[in-house]
Amino acid sequence: MLRRNSMAADPLFSSSARRRFERILGDIPGETAGPTIVFVAGLHGNEPAGALASERVAAALRQRGAALRGRVVFLSGNRQALAAGLRFVRRDLNRGWTEPQLARLCALPERALGDEDQEQRELCEALYRLERERRGRMIVIDLHTGSAPSPPFVSFGDTLLNRRLALSLPAPCILGLEEVVEGAFMSYWTDRGHASLAIEAGQHRDPESVERLVAALWLLLVASGCLRAGDVPDLAEQREHLRRASAACPPVVEVRHRHVVGSGQRFAMEPGFRSFSPVQRGQLLAHDERGPVLAPETGLLLMPRYQSQGEDGFFLVREVRPVWLKISEWLRRAGAPRVIPHLPGVRRDPARPGHLLVDPTVAFARVADVMHLCGFRRRGSVDKYLLFSTRRAVRPRRPARSAAMAVRPERPS
Image (cartoon, rainbow, N blue to C red; front, side, top):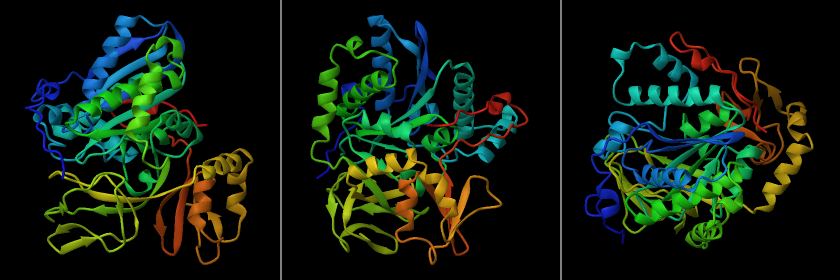
């Protein structure tokens, strides 16, 4: 059965209940130029663990006085929802991260903003300012927890730079999440040409989730080059802490299915599931107003929803052998992505720069798998064609009220 706990009853979380977090939880400049790494906590307001972990690491950085390269910034996300203890007030702040949406928000007068619109614009302005001021690469890390028990894991758009950072953490890597969740915060910053990861640390109100996030933050500060390993005396213990928490999980999985919960569907998971629970095709997973919800295939369950808000009921994933990551890296470095547009059944989309149209009746077998290996992301379908895009930075539009959007993004590795 699921653990029952309460934010108000837990001393670790009681101080965060109904608390209005500052937007900037910490901003520590380094002694020399280097990467700017930004940790964003609480895009979902019922997930305060990231903000608590950020405050701890920010305070430790100041106290230790370690020789820091670059800049480390900790931001809170949905401050109104954090204060209310809700996932969101009116809409999910981990959606709607697209150029048209952000251009619209930046063009609105201040008086027209409210709830998540206001939060998103304020967060954008803070991040665009950091983007302008950086003196090296920019890395954006999104910190999360879930409503079900879970080992820690990391998801990312599969660029080689994102992959290198993700593999620095001893936790399962999730591939393909950005293909089934449109407009996610992490995906937007990857598309702008920066490194960006999302870390899921465990259950919302489990004190262990805070400890896992603290460990992940220290490891990423070292992996990004902001700190030397010797500047974190307990680095080995932090790594072991994460390793033990996810020791029974496969190192790499890919998303196979997302169950979307519509408005008013009265979705309810069956009790007892956790992330990475094995399920069989046809197994009863949940109920909604239409009846039983069965597993469409055999696999591993990811992020089952045991909360009232949110459109993601659950995901199904399957294991990927780590050797395929090595093959994928070799293909990309050998120039395979430049060959793909010239293969039978593949052509460039004249209406969308950087996109390919693939006719699955003509193209090679297991077309999606081959495209993923070569670094392409599936964006959906157009008529009979599959639509893929290269994982390259987009050139942002310049909205009427904000010059910050005019920053030229850096092309990812």
